[in-house]
Image 1 (cartoon, rainbow, N blue to C red):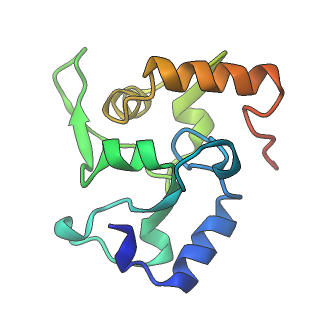
Image 2 (cartoon, rainbow, N blue to C red; image 1 turned 45 degrees about the vertical axis):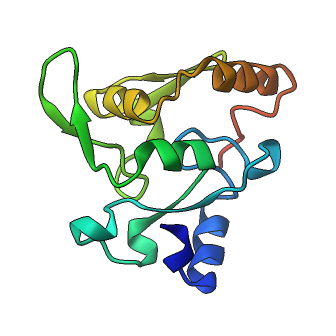
Image 3 (cartoon, rainbow, N blue to C red; image 1 turned 135 degrees about the vertical axis):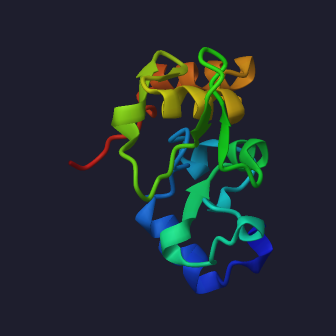
Amino acid sequence: MSQCVPLHLRREIRQRASQLCEYCLVHEDDVTLPHEPDHIIAVKHGGPTTAANLAWTCFLCNRAKGSDIASVDVATGEIIRLFSPRTDKWDEHFEIKGGAIVGKSQIGRVTCRLLQMHRPEQMELRQLFTEFRLYPPMTEE
């Protein structure tokens, strides 16, 4: 719940993420609804309100994730933890193909499904951003 995150932490995680959603990589200037902090491990699961447990997320990814920390891999039936922006590398779990974000690992696949990254309107928007070279964002290595 973003209202319980102090302003100084909001600023810190926003800057750390370069104003990008740490799940779908959309820039906050390119969407209508504001980005917000997400507890990677929800408070109800014992997650602290610290920079190490917070991610900067778009409204849609944050609402889809909610307090979830894992999901079922429909291919195997296994319970798989979700992608963690603090401990996982985005490129190891996802790739961008046009407007689609494709899971490359079980973690990536369950995260894509749970966060509903394949909603048609989101894919169309990412495709449009791609055509205007706004997406994917340029990342520093």
